[in-house]
Image (cartoon, rainbow, N blue to C red; front, side, top):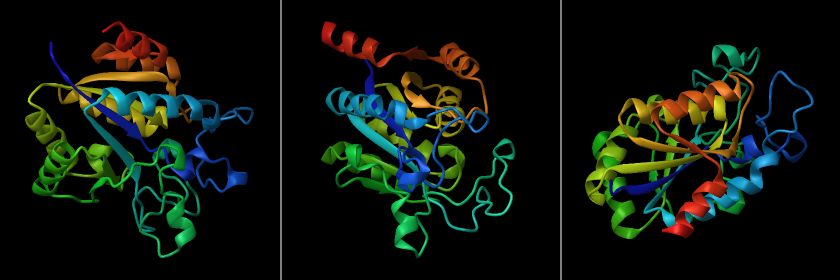
Length: 239
């Protein structure tokens, strides 16, 4: 089947990718294993995956938590990851510029002049962003207030529908980012539930230990493909 490739980069933001000593407020590493080195182990592979996407995908979409202090998933006193609450992080709506910096995509892969899909976007806003992205060959940045990109921004579904309409072919969505067992899986699961073809790049993601990696990858593989970045590279070279 002839498809249109969309690269999908999940939450590769300063607060998630920087260790605490470098200012990351919710560094992605196994919350239940103090020996886990965390997301720095896949930072280089994520950069390579994004470079591949820029070369081989027709549209590149970034997502990012974009929180206010009163969001349901922000709990400064007693956060509990198993209950879906976390300390303040990625505070894109904070009046504090230092907090806002934590919400920015890491500099190495930060999109240039993205078309922004704001929090609580309407379907028409989403369709306009999709049209702009295709017509002007611009990346998209989806701001979300919940970890699921579909629950966290009501325009996400309309964005995907319009991207497919504008590109004129079924979408194949290549996914990388963090955290594998929270934001990434909610994106992949949501795409598969909506009938989209997904390709999850297993070595360009890292988890929090909320769900076992094997369980996450097995579920993704039931509804789509799970590949190593090397496989994507070899496939594109063979075409």
